[in-house]
Image 1 (cartoon, one colour):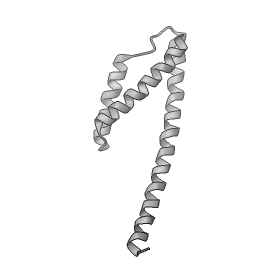
Image 2 (image 1 turned 180 degrees about the horizontal axis):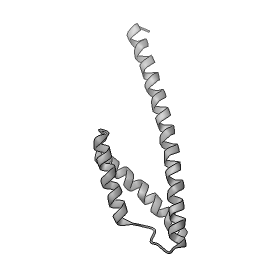
Image 3 (image 1 turned 135 degrees about the vertical axis):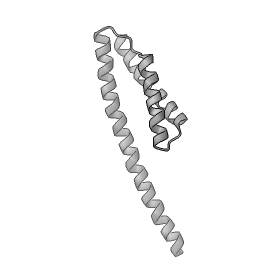
Image 4 (image 1 turned 180 degrees about the vertical axis):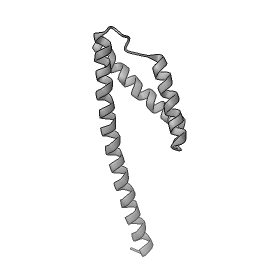
Length: 98
């Protein structure tokens, strides 16, 4: 293996290790987020509040798109991601209302 190839392999290994750490952070962060949203869902069910809050969802999407632009992340991707998360949260909340 040439020196260039060896350096490239070492850099690749470092990048992959960073990606693996970031994936773990994402998973644990999502788990923590869902713990809180499940508590919100139980609270809403106990007080007969609707499982969905469209005004809050719109605010959160707008906020996440702004944060995405600040972080140099595609705002469209951020919006799609948050919509996916919100749909899962609502699904959890609806189970408490069943």
